[in-house]
Length: 313
Image 1 (cartoon, one colour):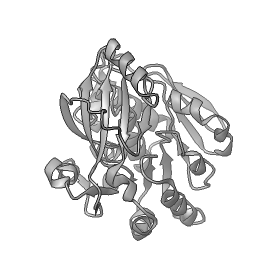
Image 2 (cartoon, helix red, strand yellow; image 1 turned 180 degrees about the vertical axis):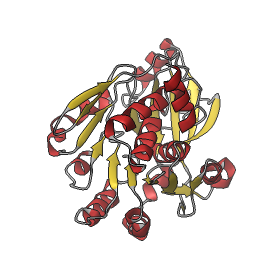
Image 3 (spheres, rainbow, N blue to C red; image 1 turned 120 degrees about the vertical axis):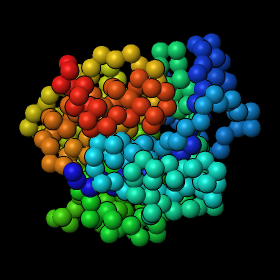
Image 4 (cartoon, one colour; image 1 turned 90 degrees about the vertical axis):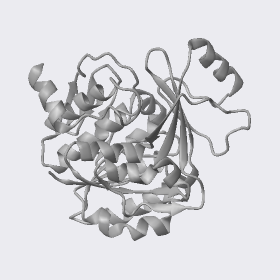
């Protein structure tokens, strides 16, 4: 079924459902509070920022995408770091329980990364990330994983760990004829620009907000762009063609992690040898189905679930 490695973030998600009035108050109080559908990375959260979580889940874009790829049938490994507190949250064991190889996940002195997720009445979300141990993913750690990266079919990257080690990895594998297919999710978009011009990046998967934020930097990217647009048709742009895929109609409960599910399924299907169109169509359905359950990972479907849904349409 193909092999996938995800190099990225591992978080604990603190989820709170908020009203429109509460969102307005947060926007007024914190000038960095993200707009709908965005993620803001804050190196040091202010002391008065203490949202009361209604639910605590496992998350992080890197980890979510790894779990999705495993659920899609790929042999999947996770690369990244958790804190010394990981046993308290089960951050690493949750990956293993989901079928992801977490043997190479490192342990940093910093606490495990945290994401504070504010879910609007519509099901849309806004995310504030405290990187924690994710910021400890350095060049030495990444270079030590070179064999795992070279031996996989598809490498998933995001922008919730330091950029420089990832850029170095992409430079190292650029001329390798047997390098993996690389999918980059430029989220959050701030600081992702140095990765877009790397020859080793084959697929870029921004959502509509990230696509707009990257602006002129997109001109540096020569690969396939997969533009996620929420419930609107996803647009795929290659050098030879452009096509769109319309997500199925579902009643969303929580859109957190839907893009991660899409990325994980896309990687797994490409690693398995599927065509781009088939991989995208499967991934779009998987992402949509995941929104029917609260939490970034709880609603991740299996490949059989997706196939059954498509067959019943």
